Image 1 (cartoon, rainbow, N blue to C red):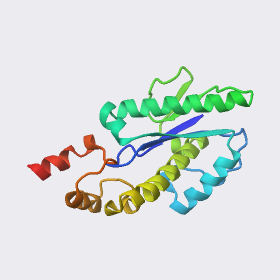
Image 2 (cartoon, rainbow, N blue to C red; image 1 turned 30 degrees about the vertical axis):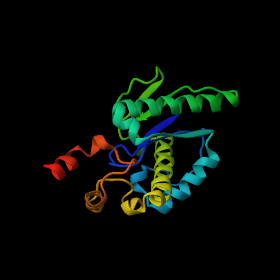
Image 3 (cartoon, one colour; image 1 turned 90 degrees about the vertical axis):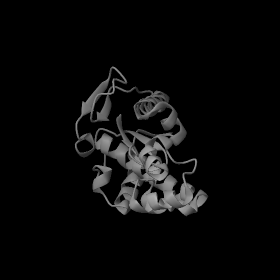
Length: 192
């Protein structure tokens, strides 16, 4: 299973972890690091990945959980949930997981863990996981969160700390989807 996260850095919205098991000879043209693809191309590839993957999953960690437990906990928890979901899917198909492929540094999640630096550009299952996570998180933030909190214009910045987002925070203050632990500098500047 390839695992990758999206949304580690935004000041609002969830962290998303994608997990994908591809067949030995996948037919997914253009799989690459999600950051290297246009939004339209990510959508196209995500649809193919969901169709051809042997198993796939997306897990979210919400802003309140990130604030309460920290990003290290959030990454570990989401990855462990994704591994468990994939194992359940594979077990239902009469097969099992033999490797857990992570993009970047060791997380010591599982004895089967293999860490691949810049894995989202080198490993198809990690790249596919990155694409699914990015598409899913962007849809959620641009759709549901943007509709619920239109004053923040989430569709424009996806929760990242852009100039526009900080201007809107100055105007409206944070909402429940903001990661308070990520806003400490902004709050200090605002109250300082």
